[in-house]
Image (cartoon, rainbow, N blue to C red; front, side):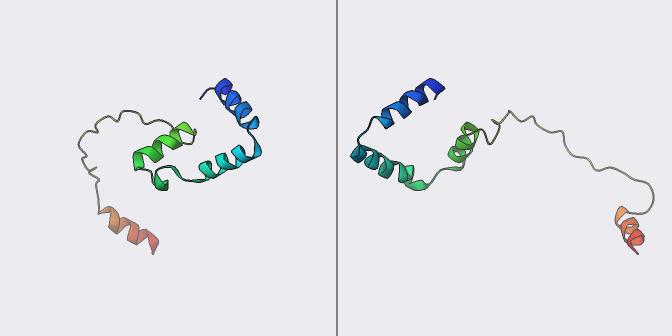
Length: 83
């Protein structure tokens, strides 16, 4: 929604009668969809609110290969240095 559309909406809400405003408050207080969002819907609402950045296409990672280190096992080194 653009700023001008929002301003028009605010202007229309301000022109409502007290009874109509109360009806609007009651409608807005009710959660849409029973209050339940799917994970994708929740994520999209967070993106629209500016809290999250949109997802980018993920590249496939190359297969993982462990690093080979010389000497004693790293776990042994950590234990020795903690003593």
